[in-house]
Image (tube, helix red, strand yellow):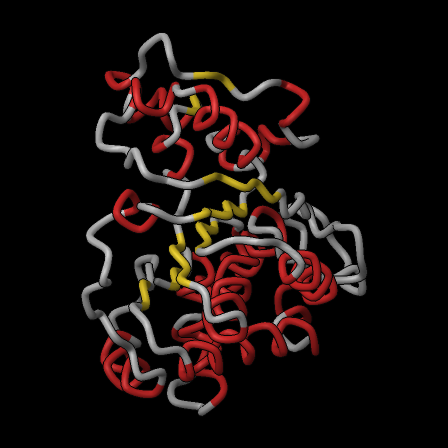
Length: 273
């Protein structure tokens, strides 16, 4: 399954509308501009040629940058070519653009078909699992300690191994390279050297790119997850405490301070940690 978050899904739809000049962009301009600021500030998308770090971007200029358009063209092309379940999530949009969603779905060959796996647990059964997420070392720790079976009785007993891979943080329009696509290529090369049967990925704006590469180029099954991934492994985050506090028992663990990125409270009030 390839999954795009709310910001990426909605901006991809707007990119499609822009690409084919289907509707006057004044109709969705304000929403698009707001989401571009979210994209650069909190999703991991970055481009150091662009000025700004935290909701201070000149969105009209940024929507026309080569990198922004290259990223969404790549995502759009990937969705057209992938043969698996696609999950898109949309923010509320002006009702004038809603009639174009049907043609958008046709353009990308949108498939809301059932996965061959009923859930994330059946996906992991009898496999060497690679988890791409910055908290994945904690998930590996929960598996190897045996805590996971005391937290989730439905967790399969026959998972062969858990391998963790931290994709790194690139919030606030900053990262280890010049832009998100350079970082993606670096991550891709590192992942290709690893030994695994399937992948769970939850990596913000990198997720759909990595999921496409792993499923189509490496021919491995991929399960894209959102911010709920830590819950499956008994990792306590602020989101867990807000929405699933009743699940927590003595086998759950907290995210240590050293694993939280600088300025993490600016990212949706620190809900992922």
